[in-house]
Length: 153
Image (tube, rainbow, N blue to C red; front, side, top):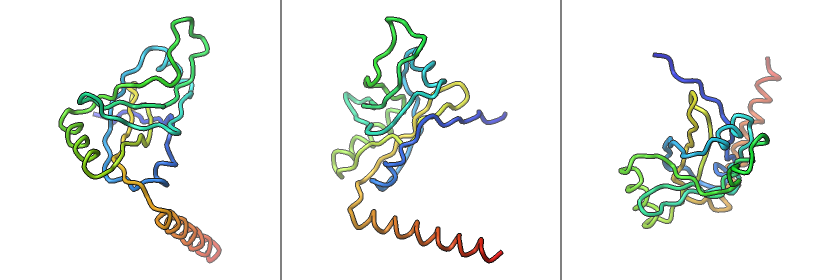
């Protein structure tokens, strides 16, 4: 059986800069029809969004899905809370970690997997300023090495 085609709709690049990602899991997402149509047109953003566990369920807050242009009065809210579909066991484990260790839940990627919309959620711990500086130094060093290697050829 062939793997379904993955088409990335939105990435949260800031999350990987601001946080150490400890664990990640693929979640389904509960959407209404006009949200899916809007996503097919590419109207999504994960900037400033976060996950939250409420009543034993995982929710995605502040993720922006643009209004569907051809929608009518029954169009969806742009930044409503959206329920994420994930195994109960995972939610219980993450809930415990969030309460005890001060970690947070951040969405990393929003994508189509076949015809289904998926969200990659990450269990993350905030980086300190010096960690961010180290990351920048490593990226710059790698870039310099790559430049030197390309000139050498």
